[in-house]
Amino acid sequence: MELNCIIVDDDLMARKSLEHLCKNIEAIKIAGVFENAQEGLDYLSSNSVDLVFLDIEMPHMSGLEFVEKAKILPQVIFTTSKTEYAFDAFEYQATDFLKKPIAPPRFAVAVEKALEVQKQNEAYKANSREVYVKEDGRYTRLSYDDILFFENVGDYVKIQTTSGNHIIHSTLKSIDGKLKSQEFLKVHRSYIVNLRKIKDIEENSLVIEKKMIPISRANKPVLMSKLNLL
Image (tube, rainbow, N blue to C red):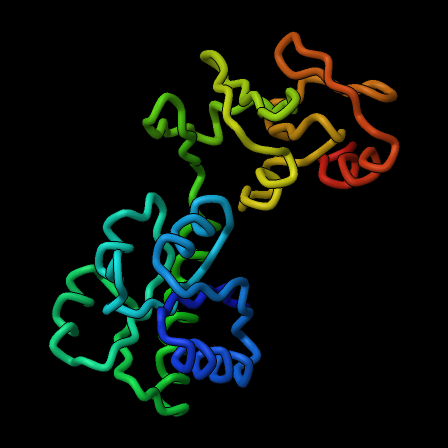
């Protein structure tokens, strides 16, 4: 397992020290290094991150304010030279709290904690049979049993369900990477289908409800291998 992380710290030497510590641990991949909280937030808003090494005392926006403003927050390991922030850090459900200067053995312990939390999160997602989609500023829960297929529509994806549809700003590639279920399969560059909802299959297409969906030549063998054929 690999943790995709960013470093947010206004101090150059602290950033360099964290980069060095990260590079000595194979499970850590540095996706970005930022000298202020706003830059880190901007990156977080449009990129997938597993872990943030976050300084607490920074000008303009502190690490604690960063946590409050983040719309989607990955795991956080706070880094600071002052231990009095420890209580606040764990109030924000931080994975760990590291006091500067950070010793390599203590850093390794913090990373192990983060890896264990990540394993638990992945296990939960793998066993979950639902997703949440954002529409009009709120998140709507969709059960896998209700989803028929995902369809690419330009810069958006339409999620067709048994009761209607939902349009979200995303890509099929992104959705395909996030679906933690063998129930779904990308059968065409424009479609991901719920295998349980297929009514019949012809040469180069399948039918779900009344919708005829194309099957690409490359994906046809994968599709057939997942079906119980008599």
